[in-house]
Image 1 (tube, helix red, strand yellow):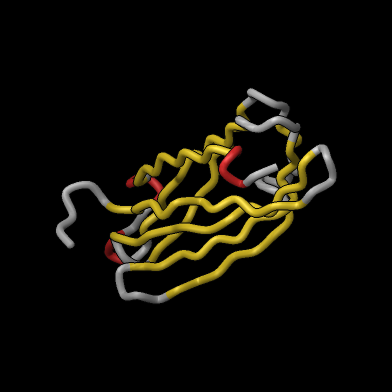
Image 2 (tube, rainbow, N blue to C red):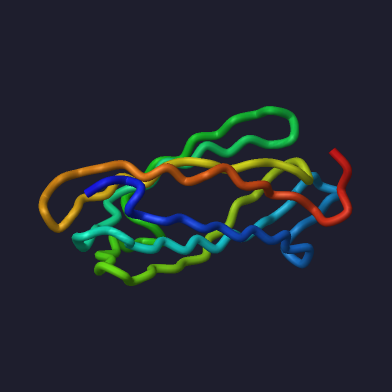
Length: 124
């Protein structure tokens, strides 16, 4: 299975009700949609995130699965989940990768394109 057989779409949103700018706490949620356009079912085994805040501070997060699951995504199906990310600045970015295994037993990685976390109406 080729990594380009998996399509990743991410939508991020700022949550003002869970943020406190006076304390430099900004909370964002992001919804990831993983679509399998390949020839085999694929299972998401682990994730790797690179999170960069507005001060260029980088944090890496690695772990098994997504939201406590290792979803098996059938051909033509989509798996969607929502998670969150706290930042100490009103602007940041995230990117990363998923490590997957195809139903044919072949492991592969899928890049998660960089996306922006930003408070609305914030200049950069």
